[in-house]
Amino acid sequence: MVTTARATLVKQGYKQAEVGVIPEEWEVKLIEEIAAIGSGTTPPRDSAERYYENGTIYWVKTMDLTNSGIYATEESVTKAALDETSLRIYPVGTVLVAMYGGFNQIGRTGLLKVPAAVNQAITAIQVYPKLVISEYLLNFLNHRVNYWKTAASSSRKDPNITSNDIKKFPLILPSVKEQQAIATALSDVDALLTSLDQLIAKKRAIKQATMQQLLTGKMRLPGFDGQGSAKLGDFFDLSPSKVRLNDNDTVTFLGMEDVSENGNILNQTVMSFSSVKKGLTFFERDDVLVAKITPCFENGKGACLEP
Image 1 (cartoon, rainbow, N blue to C red):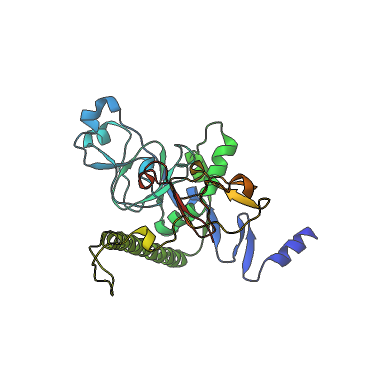
Image 2: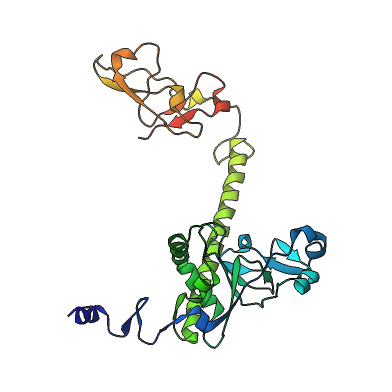
């Protein structure tokens, strides 16, 4: 009965696999079945002159992994490092996965866009192109990044994963043609997001420049001839008179210490009107508050009260 009940939940054209419900024509394979696995090392730092200085070979560390393409690295190594240690150069299209370095690093990925060597904290995955598209594997690993964090925290005292964990990772595989289509679609989304980020950055720069021009009077808005200057009192009612309240009415009291330097209200005290009606400034919702003690425009003490 249990098997029958589960079967009825699977939509036609799909099947129940060990990783969940997937299309009938898709497969599930371990990474070790679709790729060759390798790693690297860190050449001795005490031989920096021989192994690092004037190096021309890209050398990937976990901090170089950005879950996307790798076109350059922070450090490079020399040919001597390649000849005299267990380093090897991996080709373009190799997918990289960070095995340790803390939870912020575990499972981070990269895709080599240039030939490079890697350190011992990274597993290099060279896919068999007849079975897997590198870009598809990269996106799938990024999608399942929490899998690594779970494996690292549940199986070991120090959070890390091993090359064996990566070999046994279950990968959902459509046909190579569909993998390519998926990778292309996701790449198009990435390009759109990058374009939007650049547009937002450009708009922010324009706003900053416009603020500089408008707030210093270098640029004037239509209808203003620029003659004379204005004071705050020309635009606002400063320290308005108190409304009529009874002594027993409750009001909100704010001290200068209750206002943050970025314009937020940190604290407020509710008390009777009779205790604050003398010698204090009255305010209402939607008013702008500015500190009067100490240079108010230097200490940043000000806030706009919500309407």
